[in-house]
Image (cartoon, rainbow, N blue to C red; front, side):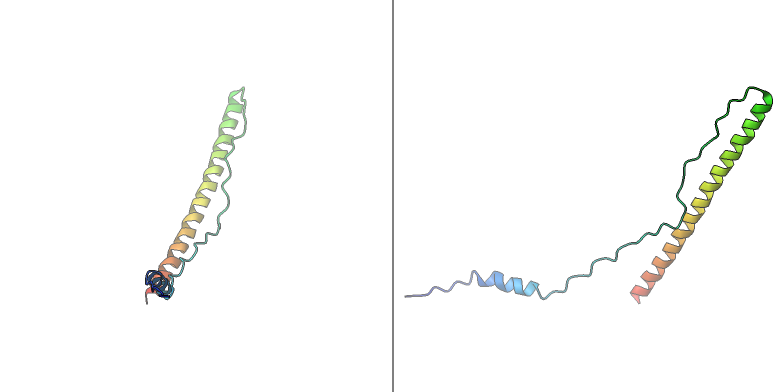
Length: 101
C-alpha cells in the first residue's frame, strides 16, 4: 500500500502557528469622564398677572431677577466645564509627552 503525502494540509497549519507568535497590540486606554459640575436645571419664571402699574413694575423686577439667577447658574456651569476641560487637556498633554519619552 502506497501512502500519498499531502503538503496541502501542512501549509495552513504552519501559517497558523506563525501568526500565533505575534504580540497583539494593547487595547487603547479607556477614557473616563467624571461629572464635576452641577447639573443644569430648567430656568423658571414666576407666574404673574399684574392689574395695576405698581404690580406691573413689581412683576418686571421679579422676572428680571429670575432671568439674572438663571444666567448666573448657566455662567457658573460653563465656567466649571471650561475648568474641567482645561484640566483634562493638561493631563492628556502630560500623558502624551510622558508616553513619547
